[in-house]
Length: 452
Picture (cartoon, rainbow, N blue to C red):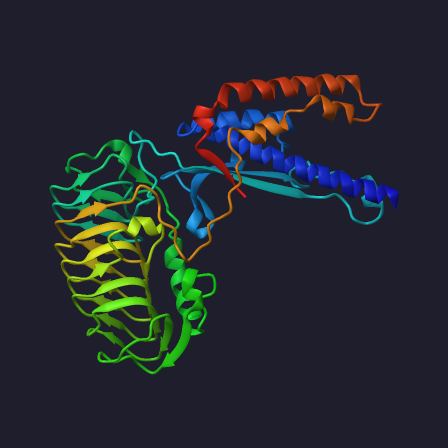
């Protein structure tokens, strides 16, 4: 029984070591960003100090991934564009030939233990000399994005059409704006000014918002907005339809089996609608703190103000649109802090007054015409359809520093510990200290942290 207890303690120590290792590797790699080759080299150097560099090592080159961490969705996905994070996964398993050998547990029928740990290091640093990270939103379509003439794209705004991005004439792009397609896709109209080669990318992006459409509609039909910001406290009201002369009650979630006609409303605020049919919104309306979800289309008129003037101070999206068919907008609308997704197309008319921090995803095309400035906040907005992860104050490479053995650690080792092993530990400690001193100055590490 004592042997099993000891081995469980050893398993706990192994898990703690692996977590420390992945933390240290992720932070060490992040110090070298945006140079991914150097980041991978730094990460592997730290990994080798923990596990060696043979084929059975718990962390190899394929276990260090570059990608995008989305705080609003509490999600990481591998990507070659908009990289702001590094994920490191350590594995001890039978397949790798490095499973934790537990002799006593083997006799008791438990066998070898397989252990896995992961860490994500991310950065909020943004340089005007580097391409952006899409933090100010963008148009993302699985078919084409079609943009007209005379548009001005500011901030970290992205245009992504998996098959094609088609640009009109006389559009201007900030240095942090990005234009991309899937591998093999095409961009037409690259004769626009201010587009550098570094702003063009090819990648298969994972459009998570589209995948939420059916789930959001189903949850809302069940009267469930749990976890969706202040919307989760709304009173559920079941109706057969909503007529144009009806008056809504604020802080309500209306669940309808018929058409939602909002064409006579002058203000839509603090309300949510979901329907198995379509939603129609008229012109000359202000829209804020609203969720609209429809199994068919959502149609807007002209001269609509989405969000508020000081929308950046909110720090979050305040209008959410989900449709299984098209989402269409009229002319002279002003969109601020809007997140939307369509299983078909998103269409915007000409002379939109402004588009700022709008995140739009469509399974088909996104079409936009002319004469708009795409503004942005200095920081990314948070979505109510995702949780912001808690952050610890792990700055200045604390994980690496904590991994350097101290004299107290040495004194706690068993008396019969091999002197050669002690020498190896000292060498590892020296190497860790050198890497910490070279790469972890306050200037380079102050913008990095770990996702916990």
